Length: 462
Image 1 (cartoon, rainbow, N blue to C red):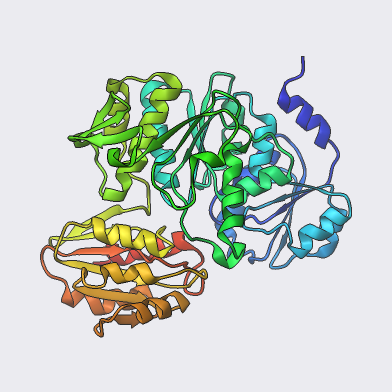
Image 2 (tube, one colour):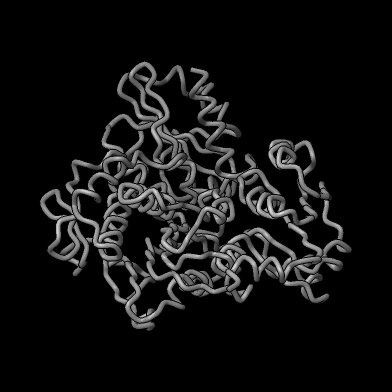
C-alpha cells in the first residue's frame, strides 16, 4: 500500500517547480531543502540579491541538488511556465505573479500544504492568534518533550515542518504555530486542514494594512478550527473581543482559559494552574518573565492534559524546563546591574503595553516605535508615565505614538545604534532596558528579527 509521500512524489514527478522567495528566516530554505533531498529539480526566484541571500544560498549549496536561481527580480515567464509554485505566506494570492501562474494552470502550494499532504500522523497541535503564538507553541513542545522524544515543533516559528517530515511516524506529536496567512494558504491549496488539538491565544488588531477589516483577519484565523471533528479539542480565551464559543460549530470540545471570575475552565488559583479542578502546575515553576505570558503557559499545559492525560509531574517538568523564546521578552544580558530585554516581536501596540506593564521596576527604559500597520495606538496612553526614559524609532507608528502621549521628553532616533549612543551614559544601576516596539520593523530593518539581532549586537558591545 502506498503511503502519502509516495503518492505526492508520483504526482509531482516531471513537474516544473518554482519556489517564490528563499528569504533569510529558514522558511524558504526548508522548502528548497525538502525537494533537494528528494532529488527534485527546482527553480528559486527572490527579489533580494545574491549578496543579500548569501547565507541561505550557502546553506542550500551544501546539500547539492539541481537548483536554478533567479535573484534580484521575478520574471513573469517563470511563473507562466511553472506547473507548481510554492509561495511564502507573506505573498498575497492577488500577487501579479501568482495570478499569472494560476491563469496558466499552475497549482499554488505552501510548505504547510505540502506537509499536510504528506504528514503520516494525525496528532497535530495547532496554535494561532495575534500574539503569544510562539510562546504557547514552544511551551507545548517543552511539555510534550517531557513526555516523549517523538515530538516536533514547526510552522511560523521559523522552522519549516518539511525539515522534519521524513522523521515522522503515525505516533509522532507535532506542534505547529500558524499565522493567518499560512492558514489562508492551506485552504487555498485545498489541503487537509484538520488540527485535532488547537489553541487560539487571542485576536487583536494586527495586519490591518493587509486585511483592511478584522472580519477578514478573523476568518483566516478560524480556519485552524474550521475542519475539526466532533470530540476534537479547542482552547480559547474566556474573555476576547472577537474569539467566542459560538463561532465554532464542529462538535469539538471547547474549553476557555483566563480568569476564574470570567467563567474560565482553565485558570490560576492561589498560585496553581488548574484545568477545571485538576491541578496542572505551580506558578513557582515558571522560569520566564511577563504577566501576559502566564496564560500562554496555562493553555499549553491544559491542552497537553486534555489531549494526552499528562499528569502534574510531567506538565510541571515541561513548564520548568521552558526558558522562553528568542526575541520574546528574552533576557539578553546584565551589565553594570542593568538588565536588557529583547521583545522585538511585539509588533502591535497592545503587545508593547503588556510588555511594559509586566516589568516590575520603577526604573524602566523603553525602546519602541517604528512603522504603522494601520492600527490604533490609543492604548499606549496607559503606559506613558511608566518608563523613566522613552526612545522611539522613527516611522509612521512613532508619529501615532507621539500624538497619543503627552510627554515632551521622548527621544526620537533613526537607528538602534543611535539609541545606545545616547542612552548608555544615562543608565543607572537597577535599570531595565526593554525593546518592545509595538510597531512593524520595515523601513529601518529587514524584519523584526533583524531588529532584534541589531539590539543584541548593541548590548553585546557594551
